[in-house]
Length: 262
Image 1 (spheres, helix red, strand yellow):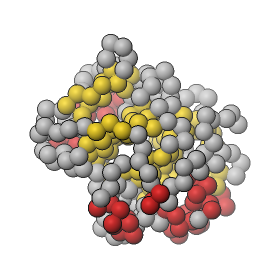
Image 2 (cartoon, helix red, strand yellow):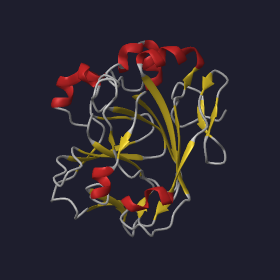
Image 3 (cartoon, helix red, strand yellow):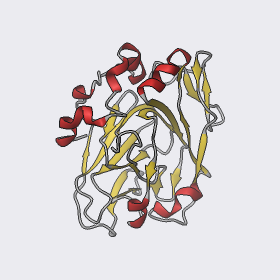
Image 4 (cartoon, helix red, strand yellow):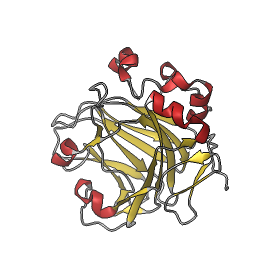
């Protein structure tokens, strides 16, 4: 199995075709779902743009076979996503933006813990999907970096290097689901990422929102959320299965979310 720039601590790599994944003998995982360009056009700056037909592949519920029952009992889900190289017109390859729907278990929107494996990512997030988007952040992340999106925030994952595919893993609630209505009503996120003539990423305000600012930054310190720098998040789970209990049950870290900055 080929090596990744960052060892995620679990034997999962992108398929050589660029679509889907290859799982190690000790790993379970589903057939991936593919998101196509036509699926996300309405949330792009230029809905008529050209780009990769398959924008990204996603496999939800991946893990070591020995951990399958424990993951279910903790209501945790580990997902792996691979983005295509290239561009969507002037925009980078990206997701359209969504909020995690309220969990059927506790009625709460749930957070997500991202870990970048290959490529360069920008995790964009804004507090609200309303006319006033609230605080807006663009968090740049490289292989080995972790970025956490808090409950209830709009977020989108952006591949910030068109020459490289982006691959990442993430901890999610097993009862995951997405809300798109607010983002689609505003024809996208509050800030569109676009490439300039030097192939550098810039940001253009979405005029369907009221004016807002954008803070571009590196990942924050997530020690209060059990993130250990340099330790893969799957290995953190293996060492301490309760470490990510706040993902399906965000109320455990209520004080952290009240003052959260990514």
